[in-house]
Amino acid sequence: MSRYRPPRKPGSFYITPEGHSSLKEELDDLWRTQRPQVTQAVSEAAAQGDRSENAEYIYGKKMLRQIDSRVRFLRMRLDQLTIVSTLPENTMCVYFGAWVTVEDEEGNETTWRIVGPDEFDLKNGLLSMDSPLGCALIGKTVGDSLLIEVENNEHYYCVINVSYEKS
Image (tube, rainbow, N blue to C red; front, side):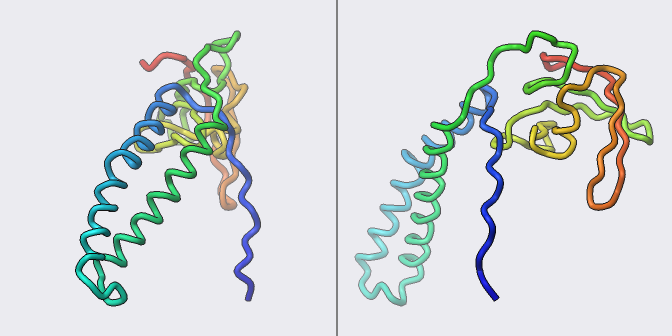
């Protein structure tokens, strides 16, 4: 059996100003705080002698690889991203950055903000524009209904409100 995995489809290259600053803060924390601490710990573990059976040394090297990998990713990704800070011409339609309130078939209302794939967080109401619901909501206006099929389950939603300011 092969270990080959087809390449993932790249996510959209849009980000909100808040998401961009969050990614920059993460990069800064990794590079200026976490990496020096782990480097110091690895250096101290290496000074203890035999590295082949030194768990602190092995774990520290693994942590350094993970930090360096994330730093490389964040640097490349931040260069690719486009910060969207302007409102669209038609603020009645759902576009990137909009706060959208939808109602499902049971009458439950949920409010989502349409954001880029690098900053989605469902617990905080941030929905990726690349998700099935996010894709379906783009371009919709108040009163529009939509049908989404996920894993052979159909979900119906109706757009209740569209705003570009958090209510």
